[in-house]
Image 1: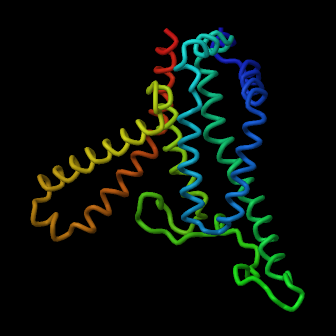
Image 2 (image 1 turned 120 degrees about the vertical axis):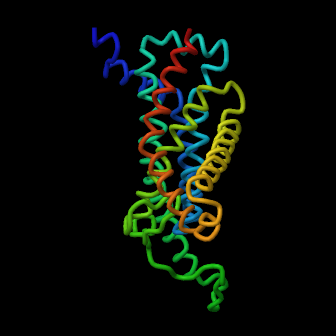
Length: 260
């Protein structure tokens, strides 16, 4: 009975189908990402933003087949359960994608540093003329360095590598955009983004009203910074620990409903 619900063999075939069909696309995509990381290298805010934003687009477009009648029929006729299909989707859009981002970051960082130092040493006109655009720099891995903790949306713990903070936010965003990719029929990425912004606005308004009612308007205004800082940290912790499995669960039910 369990074999009919969940099979690692069928999951393996789903992985095989995905990578066979998208081998060339994946190769081009990760090649472009490696080139982008060559230029960004150790600009951590830009790297973090790229990982999160590109990952969101990747997750939102994963189930594009189910929103097109001809492709959708073929997809749902694949001999695998919806649980297996969703599990494969989570692994690919979350763990595989993040691992590949780290790999191409390492490749881009190595190549970028090498080329930068090569051009910095190059005598272009043979008379000691060098371009001021390039300066010798040592190989750095700032994405893996420790970052001092601060109470904001990404930092829950002090003195942990930047990559840990990014992965925590990445997990939540991927679960949200994967669900959005299943729920919305068109413009999945933009509609999911708009829904997230609206939800945060409503949560912010509700939290503000609740704080005023409980603590009193004067206290909220006088201690606004500390109050909102604490509320944000606690809210983010709840979102991280509860919403990720929640959105995976509702994605499963939505995918099953879509089949019906």
